[in-house]
Amino acid sequence: MKLIIGSHVSFIRNSQLLGSVEEALGYGANTFMFYTGAPQNTRRESINTNLTIKAYDLMKKNDIDVNNVVVHAPYIINLANKNNADNYHFAISFLKQEIARCEELGISKIILHPGSHVGAGLEAGIENIIGALNEVIDKHQSVYICLETMSGKGSECGSTFEEIKQIIDGVKYNDKLLVCLDTCHLHDSGYDISKFDDIIHNFDNLIGIERLSCIHINDSKNERGVKKDRHNNIGLGNIGFDNLLNVIYHPMLENIPKILETPYVTENGGKDKVYPPYKWEIKMIREKQFDNHLLEHIREELV
Image 1 (cartoon, rainbow, N blue to C red):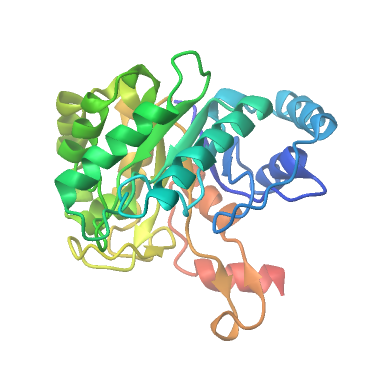
Image 2 (cartoon, one colour):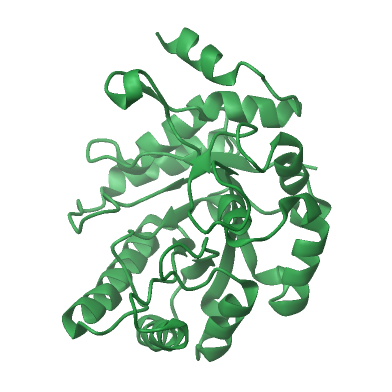
């Protein structure tokens, strides 16, 4: 089984996609995920074609398949509430722009949080998402929108497979819709990751395994079912290393990219140095051996 493993990486003005590839290689990854700009605002740099070409050359030299690389849509896109018409239409417009940026970069998948209904009610929220996606999706686009399973925090939509299926079924061109599972979100929404065989077969029966395009691998700081969405480092949370390893190496998920979004390691409550943990977490996953001193080793090496 070829493990397709990577993490969130940066995409910054001076290096763009080339810098993203270089960062991923530094972690020992063979895939990665990035935002095309800050996830909390609308500021975007024009795509530098020269940097994109260099990034593709570097990916080819290091056996990174661009079809396994994913973009994450900004957090500020909320398709589930249209009480404020301007905000709703902004979200639709901005998502279209992000899809166009993916097409320019040659990235075929963009991960999307379905949205929060913010008091409108779950059914209304889902209908709003469906309506927005019907406006966003062009049947000729090359980019697939991957709906991410959510924790159910606040008024989030999409915390169950049934809700994800309802969204998919309501969209006209739903051949352009895929799904991204998130282990922390699944756990926090109430799914028992220790019974992942049951989870993935349930997903297959309801939605279809052919729609599964990406898995976010995160441990959780919460007890199962509390609907809070707080990621933890691999093996240091309430899901546990062995349960996450079972997801990563599950035979039904062999060709699915696995992406880490675990917390950076910090000093002095985050006021001093901040370290990405991905190199060490990927090493643990490849070796299938949990490092009981993970955080200490990260700090020691990067001091």
